[in-house]
Length: 195
Image 1 (cartoon, rainbow, N blue to C red):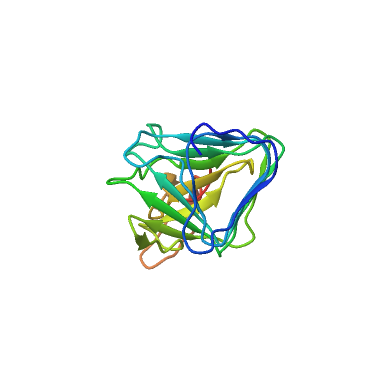
Image 2: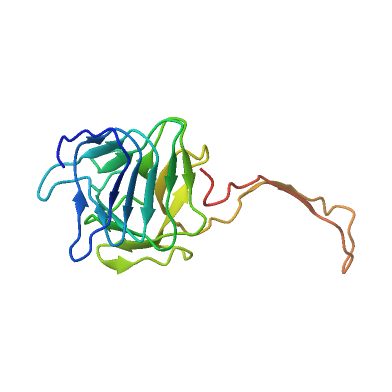
């Protein structure tokens, strides 16, 4: 539906083949289900933003994104309505295609101004056709942004141990085999997954 604009609720529920919603604007709520696929980028096209004016619900569906090597670069994205809800769960699959993905900055897949991501369970995530273990370091996971408006693709980096800022001890009054207490101040280290 390139460039299409509709004002009523639409549901895509194919019986024998996969429907694809591609670049354009859908004014109003939308539901994609029963093996339907949400694909912002037309085949062999450039990065595309697909916009929905209201709630967007995926149920037993997939969403397909082509991403560049930089999260700040030219990437597919889906916008859903302001003050609306994006709903998806573990019956859905998010497919990512990209040769070398950014490991330092999160990609924004779905976003809204003032909307809410509702994800009771996590969809399956596939990177270049391979299912990602969304719990282990060195992999990517789907993560809701801190403000709750966006669904992000986040790289799980290895945890970095905290660094010691200062340490001091005086041994001038200690004798052989005597013990003492050493105080060490350690700066707080942010969690790996903090946004």
